[in-house]
Image (cartoon, rainbow, N blue to C red; front, top):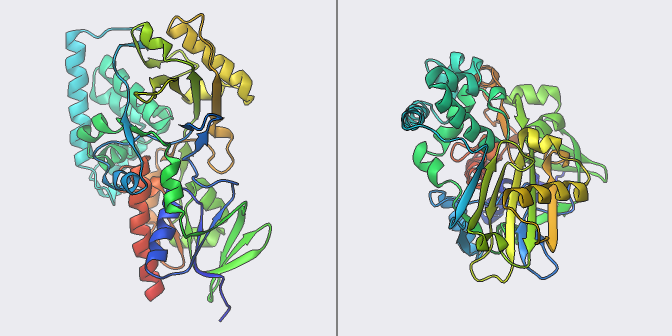
Length: 432
């Protein structure tokens, strides 16, 4: 029997990978976490400013119904702050809906909720109409079930949520996401709070007492009758079990074709297009103009903005998200990208005097370990292909991440829920 470096190797030091490692360590199993980046956190990326305040350039929003992430935030000593909503919000183009249109928007929303409730979380392909739903796109389904104005409202919301255009996503996939958050009640409260100290405080808490090896990019994984070999540029490590806590596209690339087929790691998915930009000003000047700092735009280059200024803070802070075609149109060069975003803010909020004293922007599509953000979603046809090769996570290879969550997919809560199930699977495999 070949000696192993650890009983379990986790590839990826994001929330899901760290949570899995922490839970395995807690029951006495030696675990090593390999991270390609020089930092931990994955798609959670907190950045400390020169004055010591922290901003988030990745996932950060938390809702009250997300029990695991709220519990983790409390354990890490985090302070949850509500988004500032006082003042005028901006929507462009500023089109208004008639009373009848609003009725149809609500009607389609209730239809979405009802259909989501009919979607099995663990086996969505078992729905009676699963094949038909998986053949069409989310945009096609909405257009077939609602009036044109109602379908447009819900399609725009889906585009923003997924950071991917709805005509690229399976309708069954959209319903599965909606079901995983509990339907309408979950959607309404999904993103109400953020963490004053930055979401990275939870990452640091999870990483305590875990053997994390940063700068260790894995280029292949190979199974044998004895163990699993994990090959990096620096060296090859051996383990009894391996957990892939990376985006599905990267996980599939690391596995040999035979191994991917055997465990059902066939995941035809695409990542979202997203740029996250944070602008810090000496004061929240938009409030003096009676604006809330919240905006949505179908014109771009920013898709949405919100005020993330702590209540007693002496500065002003705007969080800006660009998604889909707006993100793809933004340049790779960070200073140029920030200038375009700043010009957009000035135009929206009628500002010609205030300039940011600090700005930071991340183009997640150019992050090689993420490939986009903030999650991956399945294309039409993918779920039914999955049904033929049901991913069972048996044997020495397991996978975790918000993409594989049964609750709150694409959210930080989903990363933790997936880690819980993966830990149980790994423990079961270690016992056999």
